[in-house]
Every structure is written in C-alpha cells, then in structure tokens.
Length: 420
Image (cartoon, rainbow, N blue to C red):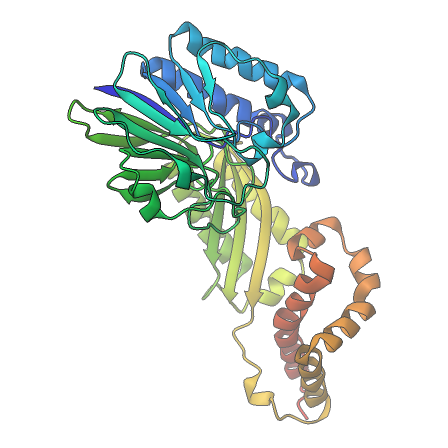
C-alpha cells in the first residue's frame, strides 16, 4: 500500500482579484493566501507520509518577474526533500509563460516532465509508472494525450496532464482530449490540472481534477485543496479530498419573495450566514450576497441602496465575529406588480411603455439611451458602479434600467393616479 498527493493549479503569489476596490478588506491575509495554502500542502504530505506528490501544472500565475516567488517555492520543496518525498510536476499554460520556471533550480527531489514529448518515470522503490508532458508554450491547442505511451505492465500507471478535457466554462481550451481516449491508455489514475473546480470525470479508471488549492475570486467558491490518494495492495484506489485553503469565497443567495420590509430580508440573510458558518467552521470567508426576487420592498431597498448595503455588511460582520468579509452585495429585485395589463394604455403611461419598447427593440435604441446617460454613469458613486457591474459599453447598466426601472416607474405613475 502507498499514498500520494494529487494537486494542481497552485498559482503561487497570484493576486486575489479587485481587492483594492473594497473598503475594509483584509488585504494582507488575502495576499498571502496562496503561499499559506501551499504550506498546508507541504505539511499534509509530511504528516501523512506520502510516497510522492504530483503537481499537474500551473505552479505560477503567468510571467512573474519577482524571483522571490521562486525562492519561496524552492524553500518549501526542500522540506519535502528532507522528508524523502519526491515531487513530480508538469508545466501548465501559466508555467510556460513564466520566466522564473525557465531559470529556477529545483531541489534534487523534484522532477519536471519534458515539454517536448511524453516521458515515463518510474518511482524508486515502488512499482509505479508516471507518464506526463508539460506545456512548451502558453496556448497549447493540440491533444497531448494522443502520444502518451501505453501502460507499463506490472506497474500502477498514472497519467499527468494539464488539460481542459472536453471543455470547461471559464477555462481556455488547452490540450483538449476525450475521456474515452484517456481510458484507452490503460492507466490506473489520471492526475489532471487546469480546471479550478474539483471534478471526477471517471470512476474506473479514476480521472479527475482536484481543483486549485486556494480560491482567488468569487468564481472560485467553496473548499479548495488536493486529493490524498491511497492505493491498496490489489491496486484499489481511494481518493479523499483535503482542504488546504486559508480563506474561502462563498455566494449567498437570499430570496426576498414575501418579505414585507428590508429587515425581513436581513432576517433571511442572517439564517443563510448561520448555515454557511456552520458548514465552513472557523475559516475566514469572503461573501458575495445576492438578494433577488419579486418583493413589495423593492422601492424601499433601491431608493436607499447605500443604507441597505451598510445594513447588510454590518449584519455579516456582527454574525461572523470578524470571520466574514462582504466582497459585494447585489440587489436584483423587482416589484410583484406586472405592467402587462397596461401594454395598451394611452396617455402618459402609454407613452412611457412605448418608449421602453422602442429602446428595447434594437441596438440603435440602446445606443441612443446609453449616449444620453453617459454623464450620469460617470457621476455614479463607486459602490453603485460595482453593484451594476458596468462593463461592455454599459450593457449591464442598460439591462438594469430596462428590467428594474420600468416596473418602478409604472408603479409610481399608478400611485399618482396617472393611467391614460
């Protein structure tokens, strides 16, 4: 029996995105997160006395020029060398773009697979054959697995590959391959990297992504870490996920339907936060709070957004006792009243609905509206700009206006007794 660790996508010293844009963010804790997560990986390998460690690409985060990142990595790998734990690595797309990786001298326990062609390495003292090839360039579009050798008879065979597999949303289509092609090699385990979400693509043989070891932004939510894999004397394989992250990103969804006041929404948020705290223990977390749904309190919230943003942040800080930081609050609310019965209205209301219809009819109307509102966009407070996610020429802002402002104006006109 032996054990090994399968990790990938370390992205050492990667900056956690857009932190400087938010007030009160614990920048230092986040800035060092990838290092501390990697230290957890080293300590896990030593404490579990694993036979070897596999890193399936992307040690770095692109073309880092600070050599201290590389020196830090070497110091960590030397700890594994002292513990007689070998490390086998393949270069991913970010490693191929890194100047550091081309000049850094690794400790003697580290073996980097060739980037020119697949190679096979047998692990000393074990009947284990590792097969792998790294990226020679950042944008590897061909299927590297096609040229991987067949399994070595009498050995436990592991394939290491940095790949998008059959394609994954949010990830470049690098080294694409099919699950059937990987299975055809006859390997016992495929250690994949590149995709930051943990995913098992096949149970027999095991083909899986461990995900990255530390979430860096709100699209990388939940526990992050590596796979601790145990292989018994019959070749049976048991992978167990081990979390390594030191800060965690979570999305919180609050359904505002049937809420009669803003405080009802806060009560529901409090319940969600309590659930998240219970599920995640004491690890610090960054939350994105999304309040959504049809609710009669839409006008109450949107007419004083800053107040409710502060109320929301204050509730999270209090509930988390300093453990929680609110990265963003998004109010995606609409009134329960539909303006459908008024589609044929005349007078002021009819003119208003006609205007909205014309603006939504095509790109020319949207362009005209955007030109008219550019000055207003520039004057928006920073927090509101972040809330509306202004980008792509204001497309998200215009969408917000169409879907939220239209029913709000209809309601106000009706309240004033204006219908035709």
